Image (cartoon, rainbow over all chains, first blue to last red; front, side, top):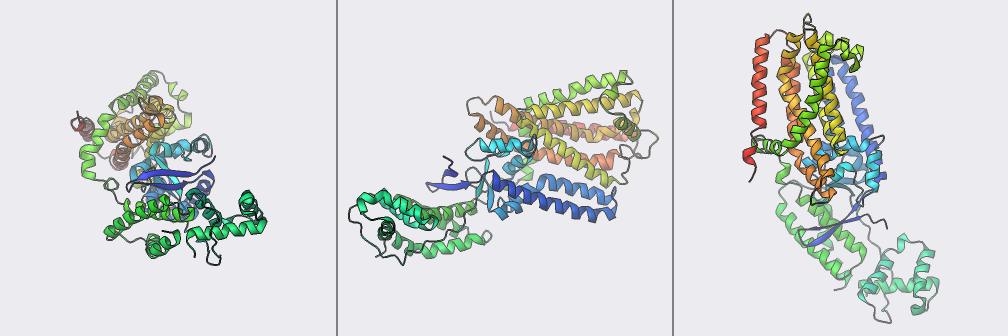
Length: 228
Length: 318
């Protein structure tokens, strides 16, 4: 199974979870960054040439070119909480593999090793590496001990106020209770036929069909949540 | 306690923290931050233990993650202590990489010496390494008749050359390091070809008797530049070796460890190459300085770099 959850036990004695990010969003983020860098270089060259293409302007241009080529990701990851502009747009972030913010050393290692990930063409090695481990780490990430996670979106709460709670007719185990609650919480992400299908598993217990079954489960879920 | 009352009880705090995580303030709130972190850790474990629903657990998990990232944003290792770095960390890293440095040195210098001897003895040998236009360009650069030495044809100022050396040399060093990830092969190739390239030019120019322009030019910045390239090779070989011979750990752990160990080398390499580019652009290229001065300054620089490079042993714990 493709499980993108990454768990670390942190000080505080709990297992913290983060969602690692696969190649596709990272490609988009990279493409955006590439565009930004390209535009920067273009503007810069227009500014620099009047100051002497092979003199002062050219010299500074080459230094900035070097910075854009090698330091752009490092500086952004360091001072912008693990995000380059592209990553920021995609809502993803580089992080040390203990889920602490990425530091200078690892950021440098992962970005210098980009050269190898790029080989032989268009990040093929990096892609192979990402697809062959559970954390979608490219070679640079493996050496640096970093990974890319998706930053949590603020989850929208499910409105359950308009559901009349209903006490279950039989006692349920805690795990069973939590599945019923999960069924309620996820009802907005599931299509109606799928909900009916899931509810019909309990046909033998609830003796309800289709919508009635779904409805009953929702009401029991509300009860378990503590609505009275 | 039912989930809903639990949520109602803490809702306000959670919302407040979620708000504050969106626009974090600097520093001063660290005590509050730590308190919130502990509290939220507790809430998360309660929610998990009581099997509250997945949405709540996820929300609390995200809160803890955000607080955790905020809490560990400023760590001592993110502040680079320059004094400690130059005094101890960099020399120690050099000492710990000594075998890799030795190998990188051999792989670069040996082919250089062989090809150099060949191009010194044989007039046409240089053309099997470089193409004729490159040879002409190099001959022109070190022509004793020229006003400035070691310049690309169009360049007008030292600042241009400074930028040129920064971009070129540091990129070469970075690639040399990165090549280590391909079990060291990339690094070996970069070192080998750079050695061959430099050796062939040195041999050829010596044969042409451009000795008084070429060697005084390279002796100064060469101390920093060649050493830094060898160091970057060593860092690359360290990665490659970690993959090939992980010892008691897994290959992945071994690689990660190497990735941490080479970091001081990388900082050092960048700094050395910036110094080298500065010397090369503003010092080495000057034609007005006498050869004696250039050789003596070059000798001093080499002595400093070498003394420094061998100063790390005392910091190794035994």
